[in-house]
Length: 483
Image 1: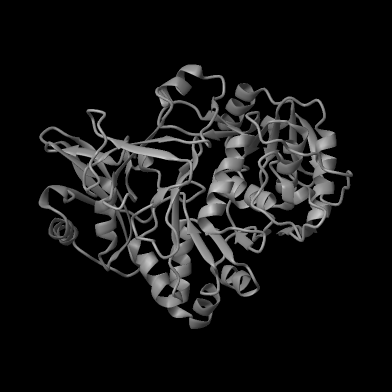
Image 2: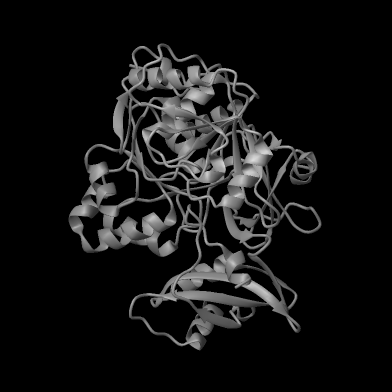
């Protein structure tokens, strides 16, 4: 049986190990390690001489095979969100200069991709032995990520960065070939593609992708033997609602060895509900496309609102406006900077943007946070929308959101600052109420003033039916600010 947490010289040793007992499953089938490796080798053969290739990233085996095949071919891969609009697809095509596109034979592709040569992925194909993928600084992935301004930028991620990040998480989470991972994350983001797919392929753990998220099926997958679950907060919210009303499902979820949440903050109420019903503490991790994973809590040391300690090999600092590290007092707010072996190589074709993001070797994340006395990081939010400067105070939107979520009537909330002639910015909260709930705006305002300090209270409450979110469940505050 394959044993070990990766190999310093090879990215996917578990796939090439003759004694590997792993298997990889998705809605379109289950393959043994040997079958998966041979099918990926067939993809690699089809990609011979391609410079850059696109991947139509659905939640199927074909996407996983395309990923492994491109890595084995040494061809940088650009994952595409199948829900991308015409303008975004046209931008990526022009920016990256791809000559081919990987997709399942049955996929219907948009007209914008018609001019790109299509390479069909067949899970039943067999192509012999899979070539070793060296761990080096060569590009593995180019992942497009949207910023606050301008079109999406291509983040170049090396094979060495991927290996370093997976190995750091394996060390922290005790992730081994004995684990079985289940998730329903999309395969065009770091969370689902690198952690949720390349993690098992590197470490030798079994993988079961559910295709789409359903709380009942998630509990059933864990009852059937899955030891790890990767999910985002909206998924855990639905799981919390389920286990509160269904003791059998709570018992199933409690069998997991590790529950991991990421991509957005997890509400303290959902932490508490799952802990109370299942005896499970949810591990939160923090990362971004440019850095991969930065920090994580660990079982037994989780704390709602905190994203943990830096991963092994990661250097993290929080600086104030004077570029001085803030005291570890869980109150002083600063900008989060990161340096690690998992940093991006840079933004594709944008040397000035790369230099601006990493002027001193540290990636300036754009996040703001505080450090607790024990060294744990708590994020306040994004500098662009979550750091509010009101009445001479620097205020983090995150703690106001957490406080409002503690009110029994509030289901979801987003807080940001809007221009104000007197205060500079006034604090505004967009609130989604629980079904059937009613509460006066003044009651919510006073709830915050009583729990925090008066200057942190919202000056305005706006009730909405839903908050705008992206595919990973992150609230898109810019859409609220410009609505």
